[in-house]
Image (cartoon, rainbow, N blue to C red):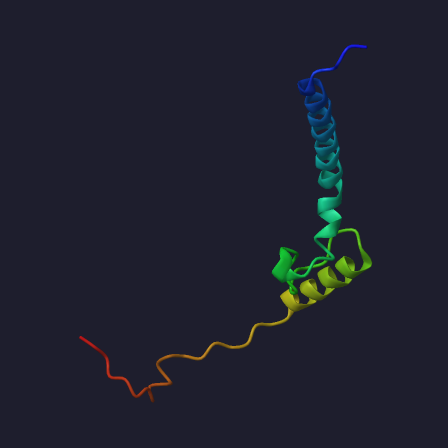
Length: 92
């Protein structure tokens, strides 16, 4: 019976680890897009005020509300000449 060198076993173990890590890399590529929706902001997820993803019902509602706000008339701007009650004097 011949003895197998220790380096052969180390090579087999390293090949198994390398192939399992390669599999995790491809899985994470597909999961990363959906998992960020469920992660809290402090852990690297989306911020709380991020708009919904396209293709969902909430996205359609968000876009309708955005369009409605865009079409509203803007508030009139204050004329700076009429409001000269500023406590600061002009600097020349």
